Length: 183
Image (tube, rainbow, N blue to C red; front, top):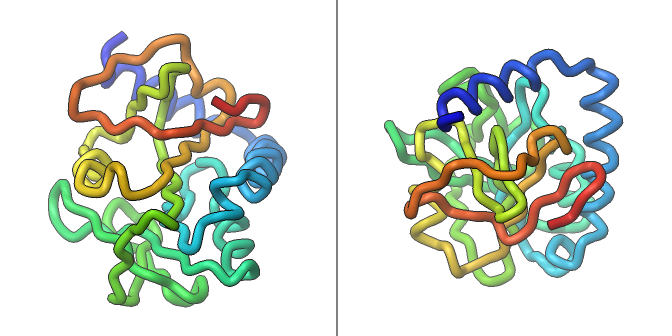
């Protein structure tokens, strides 16, 4: 299958997940993240705000605040361009582009060697290739900072395939966490 077909198929699968499945699988992934070395050692967390049955990131965000970590979330600036801005509470979010929660705050986060980046995706493979949502937003952003920090992808087991097509400009995560695997 080509990227578009995989994207459509796996977004459809994700949309059909039960609320209980999302909650239970997200809890397992949450525990893997917060107990990982890369999370424990990070100073700030660059993370998307989950939506549409994605692995729940809200609990990870709240835990980061409890652990006195700075949290930056993405905002679509223009076509193909996102920036990350620090938030201090869920009240700092509002619905933005694509009906996704985005920061109202405008203190831009700049990743450093002590940052952890949590990457979304529709499908991944065991070689850490990723199919995103098709806009290139994360690849463009991450390419600028690629060696500055660790990147973790989180997804459900069924989103981890044997192989997905990739291009030279696709940025791979350093780690992938599912409910049953760590790659």
